[in-house]
Each structure stands twice: as structure tokens, then as C-alpha cells.
Image (cartoon, rainbow, N blue to C red):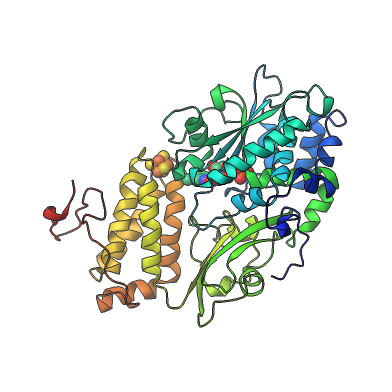
Length: 454
Ligand SMILES: Cc1cc2nc3c(=O)[nH]c(=O)nc-3n(C[C@H](O)[C@H](O)[C@H](O)COP(=O)(O)O)c2cc1C
Ligand code: SF4
């Protein structure tokens, strides 16, 4: 692996196992906390984060400091930090690698955030398939408590904060911040919209900051080395810091790489991930996790940074690159993603609950050689419907379809003209037992009621 970037978050990854407290401290770990508690005011920590222009690493890229500014300073009672380690976005595998490399970096970051917003309790929200990581964090929290970095009177000060692990029930929507708060509260985890922000009224109606785990892990570095250092880590004019890029698909070296914000997509794929796998030729990449569109080859020199990506009609998302080769059917790939989104819709609002299965059904038909021109029009008409959904889930699900129709219509058309998948994929199940949902009627095609489970 070519590494010419300072490894800030992955500093201890080379150990190949979680760094111990002693190993973390040997590299300056907990120095930021020691230089903060009782020595800097919470407002000074907030100012460092604002000046560093730290943007959320969980998908939306919202500036962390601005979110923290929303916490009412006059609130009497508990304030919470929720550490979002749900990581159910297909293609994204960074938070679990970070926890496994350096659990105390994560814990120190969380405590710094708690200090800045005056939180006394934290919830580490983690998906159930990461049980080993949940146990690791619990164990290292015990170690941190024993050494005065967590719990009552941290480092002998009057600041107390403790962290508890909450295992998710395991649905993708539980990663959405407001749904996550409901999930922790034992409520149905459909997102909340309108009303006060979670920074004002979140967990148990108290001020709550939800941040992605990677976002918070940047805090020790920012506090120790300063905002200018953090900004200089990025390669783009608008960027700050490094980023953990998850790279999967048809590349020679799939994996998670810490590289500057602003590195080009081409460099990530063709240098760090070793280029395409033997015998494979690049076709496209989904650059930011499943909720982002296919990116055409012409945009490979785009900088991986929030603003340049948006300006090019793309999305930075979780910076998780799924690479596809020329032999992969993109109708089939998009269908596969829609199977996921249709299954994971929380069902709260009609555009998403009905719209995504309808898109899935259309893609099944096109992939199975039964598609028509009319189906393409229906797909096109459905995309703006998803944008009217209640939360960001459905607009995100629409992105790969939008990318398919914008950049790869030739593949869609080839399915329709040839009446089969030109890549030789077998036809997907149409409205059959495998779909597990009620049938959707399109045009004159009769519904095979005898196959439908409902
Ligand atoms: C459907 C959906 C799933 C999400 N899943 C995650 C997730 O697994 N992890 C995460 O950090 N953010 C996830 N988010 C984004 C969160 O709502 C929220 O923006 C984020 O946790 C805020 O942290 P950040 O500002 O540090 O990125 C998801 C959003 C949506 C709409
Ligand atoms: S868009 Fe989907 S996930 Fe979001 S509230 Fe509506 S049904 Fe639920």
C-alpha cells in the first residue's frame, strides 16, 4: 500500500490489532484531553473545531462545530453525545476498522466533544453485526475509567462523563440521526422532521449531539495540533483533514485507506487500491456509498471533497468507493441496491414505501428482458417522487438509478432491444416468492397470483 499521507486516524493500524492504552499514550494519546480539561473552556474547544472546519464524516458533511453551537448553553439537566457507529450503508466499512485500530482515539474524541457541549452521558450506537467491536469498546471504556479518562471527575476535574454501548436492532434507518434517537429510546425508529433540532431536543427530550464515529476521532488531533494543521492535511482548497476511504469492488487491493480530503478518485482507485483487478477494465464507480450515483470515467479526476463533488452533481457521502468493471451489468447492480433499499425502507411515508419497490419491479423487468420504453419513462417519472419522501433515505436510494439513467442509458436500452441481460445475468424473480412483497401491477402483464406469497 502506498502511504504518503500522515496517518492520523490510522496511526496505530499497523499493529494489526487494537492499540492498548499504553500504546495510544506512547504516541501522545490523551494529551489533548489533559491539555483541555480544566485548562481550556468548552467554548475554546468549540472554536478550535469551528476553525478547523471539521465536517461530518457520516454522509451529510454538516460542519461539526456549527451543530454543537446549536446546543443551548442554559439547559439545566443532562446533555448527550450519541456516537453513530451504525455503518449500514452498503460499501462503507471504516468505523469498525477505526474502532479496531485505536479504541482510545475514539474514546478521547468522544470525551472532548462531551466536554465542549457539556454532556454528561454518551451512547455508543453500534450495529449488531459489530458485536466484537461493541465488546472491545466496553472493555476499553473500563480501562479508560480506571485511568481517569472517563467516568466521574475526569483527570481530577469537576467534569464527569460516561459512555454506554447501545446495540442496534439492526435496520439501516437506525443510522439516521433522529431515528437513532428514537431507537435508543425504545420507540419505532422512523425519522423525525420539523420541530426543534436534536441539538436542542434529542434523547429523552434533552440536548443531544449525534456525530459519526470518524468525525469524533478527529478531535484529539485538532485539539493537540490546531486547526491550521488539520486544514493543511487536505489537498483541496475547500477541504480539511484526512478521510477514511472504503474501496470495494473490482480493484486489485480493496480496503480502507486514510488519505487527504481532496485526493482524486483516480488516485484512490489506481494508486492506493492498486488499480483494477487482473483482467478487469474500469467502467464506473459509486463514490460515496450506496446512496450516491454512478460516476462516469470522465469525472475520475474529481477531488474527493464535499463541495467539488456537489458542484459536479455527485455526492461525497461516506467516501466509500464501489468500483465496477466493464463486465458488470449496471442494471443488475442498481437492482441489487434497490433490493436493499426496498427492504430497509421504514415504511413511514408513501413515496418511499411504494416508490422504491416500484422502481425495483421496473428494474427487475428490464434486467429480465421484459422491459419496454414505457418502463424507462416510468423510472424517470418515479425519481422526483422519491425526492418528496419524508427523510433523506429515499432521495439517497434514487441516486444510483439517477446515475444509471444519466450516464448508462446505453446499457438500459441494450436490455430492452436484446430482450435479455446483455451481460448474461439470469432473469431476476418477478413478483415471485423471492420478492416477499405484494405484487405491483404495471400495464397489461398479469400478476402470477399463484406465485405471490400474499
Ligand atoms: C438512511 C440514513 C442512514 C444513515 N446511516 C448513518 C450511519 O450509519 N452512520 C452515520 O454516521 N450517519 C448515518 N446517517 C447520517 C446521520 O443522519 C447523521 O447525519 C450523522 O450521523 C451525523 O454525524 P456527522 O455530522 O458526524 O456525519 C444516515 C442518514 C440516513 C438518511
Ligand atoms: S423516506 Fe423511507 S425511510 Fe424515510 S421516513 Fe419515508 S419511508 Fe421511512
